[in-house]
Length: 266
Image 1 (cartoon, helix red, strand yellow):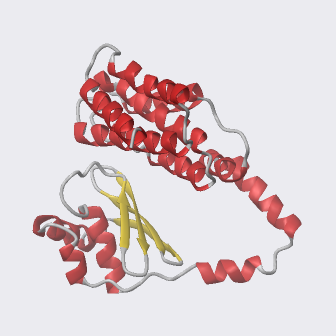
Image 2 (spheres, rainbow, N blue to C red):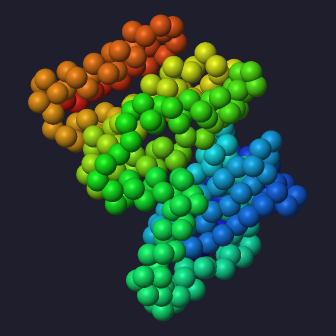
Image 3 (tube, rainbow, N blue to C red):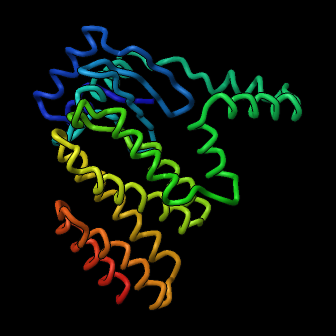
């Protein structure tokens, strides 16, 4: 877990780097945990933001739930990286591995069952990883609609975090369950587009969210090697959104259709 101030500075703009340094000095990192090469943290700003840092052999992957859309890492990520550079946090993975070796299968099953009962998001990720079924498009859309309702005051000014839906889709993709993943991506771009007139801030965040969902949907559709009839059905989903009133994001959907058709015909 080797990272230097110079590396961190090179990953961000000068202004963001200084704000990140200030955030760390002010003690805004509320929580920081390490499990192997994965670090998760919570950093307070205008809200409490979740930061994830994953160290690879030659790369550092970062993610933050804040609405930053500028170049490089955001100030919350910079603050966390600076804290890691000052002294890597204690790695909990070895302790967990040591305990796992002494736990019986029955006790482990009981613990997992209790954890899944208490944490709905963990349960959903578990089912996406190991289950054979998945939620319907309407179920996912209802969950996303509830997020908008929770953040509306009376409109939505801040960036809503949709990362758990993308994580679920990724779990399906890792198992080659492309249609299940496509269902999640479709729910995201349809419901965010549907609620766009609720949004009065962080517009770039929501445009990127739609684009990420569109890109994921296209990848999954093409991964199924669809017949021409099946392809028309999948492309029709995008056309339906492109022609839905009010046509706020219609150009984005038409571009997605053109891109999908071009890739299918290659």
